[in-house]
Length: 207
DNA sequence: AACGCTATCAACCGCTCTCGC
DNA sequence: AGCGAGAGCGGTTGATAGCGT
Image 1 (cartoon, helix red, strand yellow):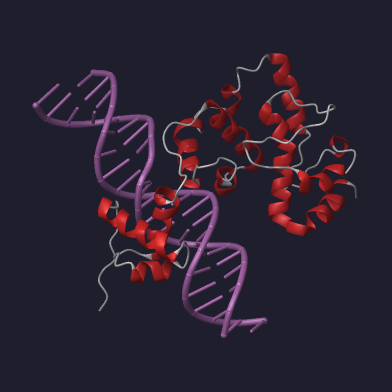
Image 2: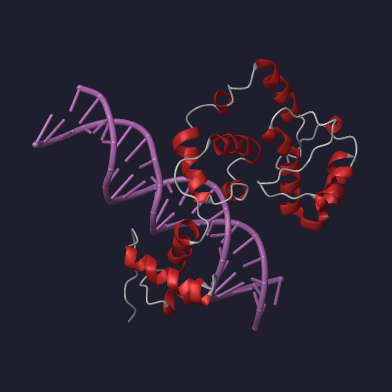
């Protein structure tokens, strides 16, 4: 008969066991990890603990202004796609982003968070956001995109947050993250439709 | 000091998706 | 095509820290 699996908070010694096991055997195959590591934890529990707490390069502590702003904007675009949002915040986990949203940001309207922008910039920003393609609803402002050159250029863009893509002179965007928004849309399309993204765009925008 | 309320966040749960057979 | 296992995701829960009365 198998021992009853432990639940609740992880002890430091459990963390150490899991960390050592994953470091020597590699990430993944959590069922095996749970069985062979000696931990009396479920595979799910091990995976979650590793992913949200133990894996390298986890960034903990206060969200920066930039991170907060980015979360607000991405949430506006993507909704509760926490893993997708977290994927754009190096070192942050989906759970952390979700918690942060629910405790810090959900209460107040996202509009309040960007009050540092002057009214003119804000007006223009809203205008631009409205013209952003939204995959989930397939609502597309036909006039927002006049050519498909960006599709080809996607393969040449470095998407890391440390190296924002250079925007052409005619870019209508006013601050760093606004400039990202169409690219993020492209991310969504690519992540959702993979190699069919181009085809989908053609169907949706130019049909 | 004791109590109640609220905020925070780690962890669990249920569901869906993907993949191999 | 159908099934089962494993992995991942988002919603929710519950422990506890902090604060006010």
